[in-house]
Length: 279
Image (tube, rainbow, N blue to C red; front, top):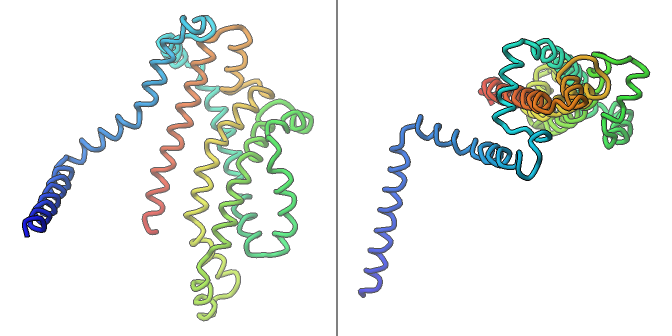
């Protein structure tokens, strides 16, 4: 009889401890929890920066790998002098145009392939064949067609971002709840209204996910294109600084475009959460 009692007492104590633990977590103020999560998220970057600082001048000569402190100073000089702003604006403009075109074409193409068999049959093989091709490999061809400059960079960004948006739009339209479609048809909804009032709203969440995937791809494709075929932009600044051995400036521009890409993705995620508040 003592063993069961002991077991009950143990289980009771466990429940009590569990309740205390839950209450103790709930008692932590929300701002403190957010601050702790923020610090935890940035720990890997801090570790990387420390390792970078240590490696510079020890494992790697400082002339080739300048320390973060020197790179930060170079970033300040670029910002104060204003040299970086026109190039950054050019790069962001190219990303905006290329990504915008890929969204417009990709959404229509993906939904069209999901809802219309002839469209899928026509484009499926073409997309499957072009998907494995690195888009930067098309830069020389784009230079022949469009020359060196904005048009080539926009084309490369467009091609690089197109497929993730097409795939997400296709999957979203393919998986639209059949009950919604059936109910709309029973209420007399014609094909055009069905597409506009049922299919499009049902696909928005996954389409926005595809755009989220395309944003970092757009930055990667842009810098790659500007390294090869541009006379302006952040990629061009990185290339010219590296060619003359100005590695602090080169790393400074790399950090700047990385930070801009990071905040672009985070800003988009916040916007997406607000747009999808109804889901």
